[in-house]
Length: 332
Ligand SMILES: Cc1cc2nc3c(=O)[nH]c(=O)nc-3n(C[C@H](O)[C@H](O)[C@H](O)COP(=O)(O)OP(=O)(O)OC[C@H]3O[C@@H](n4cnc5c(N)ncnc54)[C@H](O)[C@@H]3O)c2cc1C
Image 1 (cartoon, rainbow, N blue to C red):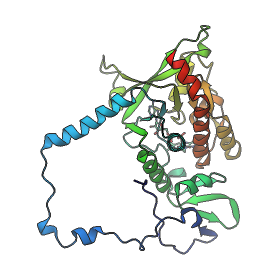
Image 2 (cartoon, rainbow, N blue to C red; image 1 turned 60 degrees about the vertical axis):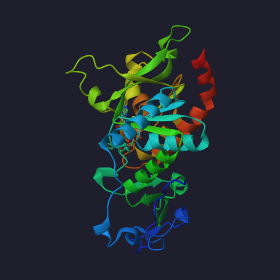
Image 3 (cartoon, protein in one colour; image 1 turned 45 degrees about the vertical axis):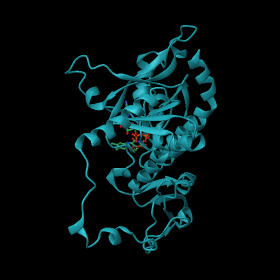
Image 4 (spheres, rainbow, N blue to C red; image 1 turned 120 degrees about the vertical axis):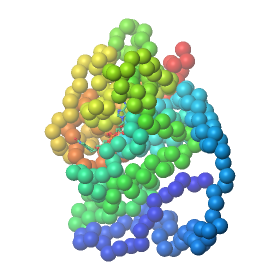
C-alpha cells in the first residue's frame, strides 16, 4: 500500500508576491478531480446502516495483542529515536526509507507526536523553510508557496500540513513503531574499556508511560521498562520540562562537562550550525535538532524549520555510518 500523501488544493489566487508551487506535488491528485466514493456508498442509506457486530473483549484483545507484539519485537531495536518533533520524524523518514531492514522505534513523551511543528512562530499557522530545505517538502509532496521577489525561502500554508504529511509517511513504513505517551527516563549505558566516563557507550533507553514519569515524586516504586539498540538518536528539543533530555543526562553522568546552553536568536548562523554539527556526541548517541543547541551553545533560530528537517537527514546519515560498528560492539 502506498503511503497517504498530501492533497493539493485547487489552485487559488496567489497572494501578492507569492506563487503556488505545483511542481512539488505534480503527481498528487487535485481535489475535485478525484471525487469521494463515500457519499455514493453511504449517502441517503442511513436507515439501513449498521456496524458489523463485535464483542467488547475482541476490541481489547485486538489492541493489546498488537501492542504487546510490538513491545516484544522492538525491545531489541536497531535504532531508537527519542522525540517525534520535526527533527525526529525527519530522521525516521530518511532512515526508514533508506534502510527498510532496520527496526526503528520512536519514543515520544506526548500523546500527540509532532513537537513544536504544528504551528509557526507566535502560534501563527504558516511554516517557513529556507532553501535548500524545500527539497524535503518536494520529497514528501507537500505543496508550498514561493516569494516571487525572494527565492531564498518557501512557505507552507499551515505547519500542520507538513507535520501531518510527514507523520503519516513515517507511520506507513512497516519498519517503524511509534510509542507515544511514553517517555525516555534514562539511557542504558556500558562502561568504557578505559573507565573514562566520556567514552561511556549508550546501549538503549529506559522508558515509562509519561503519566508515570510525571508522578515519580508522589508515587514510589514505579519501575520502568527498557529498549536496547546499538544507535540512539535524541531529538528532544530545547530545554524545558521534557526537552534536551539526553543532553542533560550526558552532563549528569559526566560524559559531557557542561551544557553550552542555547544562545540568542540568529537565524543565519543557527540553522547551518545545527545541520552541520548533527553528530554522534557520545558512542551510540546521536543528537540532532534543537537539542543540539543545548549541547553546543548554538543560537536559537526562531520559526524557521529547514534546519530541523535537514538535521534529520544528517542524523540518519550519521546513524548509517556508525551502525555496523555499534551493532558489533553491542554484541561483544
Ligand atoms: C514554546 C516554544 C518555543 C520555541 N522556541 C524556539 C527557539 O527558541 N528556537 C527555535 O529555533 N525554535 C523554537 N521553537 C520552534 C520549534 O518548536 C523548534 O524549532 C522545533 O520544534 C524544534 O524541533 P525538534 O524536533 O528539535 O524538537 P521539538 O519539536 O521540540 O520535539 C521534541 C519532541 O521530543 C519529545 N520529548 C522530549 N523529551 C522527551 C523524552 N524524555 N522522551 C520522549 N520524548 C521526549 C517532546 O514531547 C517533543 O515532541 C519554539 C517552539 C515553541 C512551541
